[in-house]
Image (cartoon, rainbow, N blue to C red):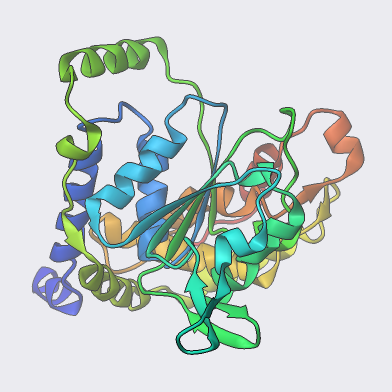
Length: 325
């Protein structure tokens, strides 16, 4: 009887089938990187954006392109460079001699899935062009406001900031990313599998191998389901205590914002739904805490000097707290 009531409460069959279909398409090309793919799909369902960091050549851009390929929606790619201007991203008014007036020519950011490649190679002036777009889903140009299409998602890749020719992203922009995913090198067995797979593909093109499996309208319907996922009051209190700890921890100079607590809540709902549940558990929260917070906190200078990482401090905070049962 309880199982029957559970099924009637929220039917997640379509959502789970969509997630499985996207995973299967991506696995035709990508070896490993399951965590990155999972978090990108969770962000899509939670209506968030993803920052992907890793050294060149670990399939950051390829994975982002393949996720977009699986969706039957618009896709655009913007390569950030030091000489890129905000108008190259947003668009610019163009004079129409027939009408004797200016018409706004939309830039590449006006799409559904926008891949911003090497976002930290452009100066702050160009990076700031994304601030309003990512948070409010609109762009203001010459006193007019232009709404973005739905669904809308920014997938940004960046190289480690220690590399030459990179700029650290402003804190305000980092806060607008739901997740920061760190992509490691593949292990030796995965490296061999990559070589084998691409050798067997021969002359086949990636776009011919991976096919769209879900439409934009279906994505919007699934997002509505995510908002209805249940979360108990004690879990909301757990998230609030966790965020408050980051603001009062001796190892942290700048703690997480209220946007971070909302991000944890929304991301945990998406993860729960992807697991086939219409309710959030403490494990869902613990799974998303590190990718949600690692780019939103700034460590104290002495901890940075010691080589302590954001991930280590976040784990310490979680381990020191009583997890709801």
